[in-house]
Length: 261
Length: 288
Image (cartoon, rainbow over all chains, first blue to last red; front, side, top):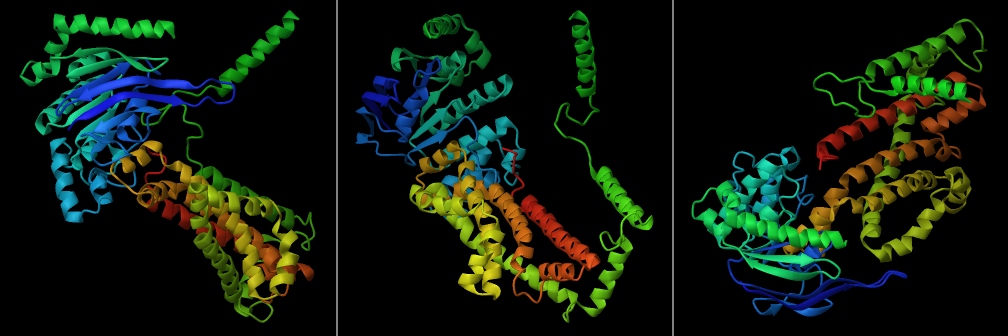
């Protein structure tokens, strides 16, 4: 899977006397198969706009978004989105939520339950297949959301602050789970977060964005998720001097943006 | 000035003490508005009202012509149950009235819910149907009853149509508002799986709107019962509303009150049924 964004800009038209807002300016991203790209930045830097652009919910004002060389024309099953919250369907149980995408694509009940149950097991939800989703904890609900996104075998997984609503401990567990999933399935992931530590720990590539206009100001290549997958304990990776050094550097960049705002 | 301030301070302190909640017992949540069981209090209120009613009549403070005793109404009920009213048994009056109300209600749901959904998702339908519905909605049914009779005669059509119109507006507007219930994330999730607009409507918007639709149905049938008496005002020979009106012309106050109680009882039973359906159909209401 190759995602290529060339000189993409998004301008929201001005309302009344307010001038137009340049939400994204000249975004260039090149993502190869198996990349884990994390976007971080202060609020209003256009992270979510960028994700909407890739998902196909939004068309760029100028520039282009290419998926395997073809221009993105709208949302499609080759790019699944995991949302922060509110995206599960409370009228369906866990199994029907997970296999929802397959149902929309017209697969038979047996086929979609077979696939769904595989991902239910993969995400440690076995035994909860028939539970209503509103009865689950926040962490389990998020795992249902991730399982649902994986069932349609997307080329690219788009995650919009998927762990933002979780408590600190559940969040660290979920980070490790997502890294293992990514490693096992070989999917490409585009991940948005507000947490610098999470960004550095998870990504192979980090893009740091700044607001007004939303643009990419820094790019980093990151080795930490590989180290974790090779066997280092997560906390040891996050406590290494190298990790702390780059963490403080990125925090400095983001705080500088917040100061200006 | 200063004494005023201290007095105000004292009053404020008293109010604060009165309005401050006590710590709750384990298993309860502190500060939930309106928590607590009301069954005992409700039963007590009904008992007190009945007692006051009985007392007024027993002490002969008011003439029975204006307020008949509770036991008189019960007796009347038994008599009419045995002998019927104006040549027709009581159950046939009840049956024809519930038939009119539920017929109109079902018709209003069958037309109103799809139309409301269409208005919610399509600017075209909203543009076309918003003005007529908003125009007639605030008009009391009694005001357009004469028109219904001029246009549709004095048969069943005008009666059912009158009730239909009073149910139609709340049901339609409820379904229309329900379209907004789906979270945008739920809709985006469906589209990102390649859903068509029709699938989004069928699998996201419609189920998400169910709680509001059921509430609108409850409100709507309430309007239906309110309109029943008006609908049976002209050229009816059967029905609870007719019974109330006919009895009032002969100053049969006991029958009037009996009719009112019957209408209230049926409406209440149906509301209980709707609440039961609500718990079965949308157990997730308010939980996500």
